[in-house]
Amino acid sequence: MTFSLFIIYKIVLVVVVFLISLVIAMYSTYAERKVAAFMQDRLGPNRAGPFGILQPVADGVKMFMKEEIIPQVSNKFLFILGPSIAMFTSCITGAVIPWGTSLHLFGHDFSLQVTDINIGILYIMAVTSIGVYGIMIGGWASNNKYSLLGALRASSQMISYEVAMGLAIIALVMHTGTLSLKAIAAQQVGWHWNVFYQPVGFLIFLVCAFAETNRTPFDLPESDSELIGGYHTEYSSMKLGFYLFAEYINMFISSAIMSTLYFGGYNMPLIGRLHLSPNTAAILGVVFLFAKIFFFIFFFMWVRWTVPRFRFDQLMNLGWKILIPLSIFWVAITGFVTLMIHR
Amino acid sequence: MQTLTTRSKVASNKKMTFVEKLYLPAIMGGMALTLKHFFKKKVTIQYPEQKREFAPVFRGQHVLKRDENGAERCTACGLCAVACPAEAITMTAAERKPGEEALYREEKYASVYEINMLRCIFCGLCEEACPKEAIFLTDRMVDTDYVRKNFIYGKDKLVDPLNNPIDVSKRETRETREFKTHPEFTHNKLNTKSLK
Ligand code: SF4
Ligand code: SF4
Image (cartoon, rainbow over all chains, first blue to last red; front, side, top):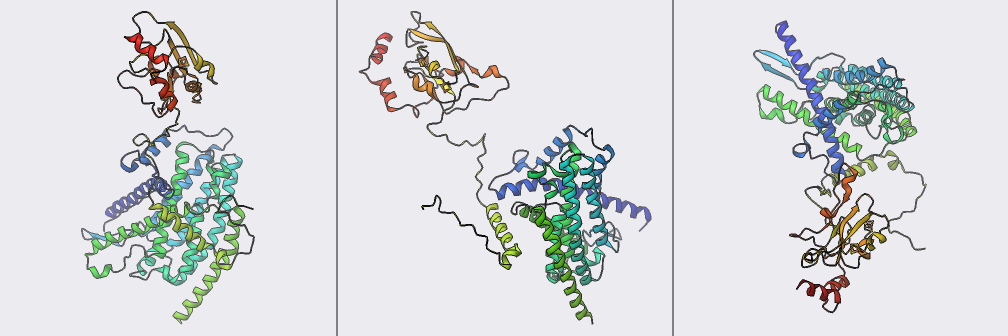
């Protein structure tokens, strides 16, 4: 592959992944409202276009038309930096996710992963940890007690749950023996999904993913009933839109990560028997991965409209006294079993 | 003691069992419930297209009825205005000229009759006070508007349209109907005579 072709292919892939993230985030807002409505025996938005399909567009236009307010007492630079970081970090996580195997076109192999770094999982952990800065800086710069409380909650919550999440991932890595997401996805051919080997690890990861994305039952940073809007109380117009968007992109990305790490990624059971051409199989793999992702996005919403919010002390209790010991225990078990097998 | 509801449960502070402490069974139970609702029939009424039927006693926008010959029943006695707790009704009386018998039922009629729909509380006392069975509240909503002065409804909006009268039979009591139609009553006789 020539260098220029390589560059063009990567740019196209990056733009496609970026656009898909945005569109999915857009339609997640719509899906969220629909799911919420259906679970409450309502119909949800159905006026803008057929079945309300254009609702996200209407929402977007509304967001853009809103007056941009930067409070006098806020730190202007940080105030703008906050949502930018939140949006930026949530967008760049998609880079290491293997969206599929590879397409063979014009005599070249095009891998459907923007970049396969050998420490993919660490990269994701690192980027999500930076994500908390977006919230923290935004809440701090607003110079508002509610924002500050929201930001404090967000940072303490994320730091607490990252520990358990990291430990769950350590157990997974002990099982797979690699940090590269591509290798992890490739290992899970057929029914060898990691969730069957790491059920407790998956459960811990799932709970932590909810906490990391600030979704109910862990939506304390923006708990509207206590903190008005939490860290984004002072935000308006598209800066608010960025925060909300970042949350939905995070949801999408964490669904993708969960599918890749635990649910076989783009692998389909039984697909090997169909004897499809490699390209068709690759495309079907992408479709299958997205089916899993959509299921998880639905799952996120499903939980949101079922489970009430935790109290803050309960949240900390769960994180430090239950999830962390449990994950350490699970790491020990995994280590022991792995040792037994590989002896 | 008799309980107020059959669904009350005695609260207890007993220690949770290990399974209960796990929360997961409870969460799954909750999620099964929400999923069940997901596929349930929706209760939404799509308002402008679909309308929910009003109760027969619903009190909405007023109508000034005409009698069976199309003459306005109101005689501008002002009893409705007196009865109105919100002081929403104002009117100007005028005398019926010869030849206007087909327009106005009595010798005196309301040349101006206004109800301020922003003041009105739709209590229906005007309807009860009216001795001539002229004013009724109907099952129509008062339309929205941008300016206050448009909410002062004059006779143009209140009087029953000639060609398609508004049905108020649901609000008419048996006594009312009798009052209007019974041949023994003098006013019913009077009317038929004056028109002849
Ligand atoms: S309904 Fe009540 S408030 Fe309205 S005009 Fe009649 S008497 Fe007055
Ligand atoms: S509506 Fe009835 S109560 Fe009111 S002025 Fe006319 S006749 Fe009298």
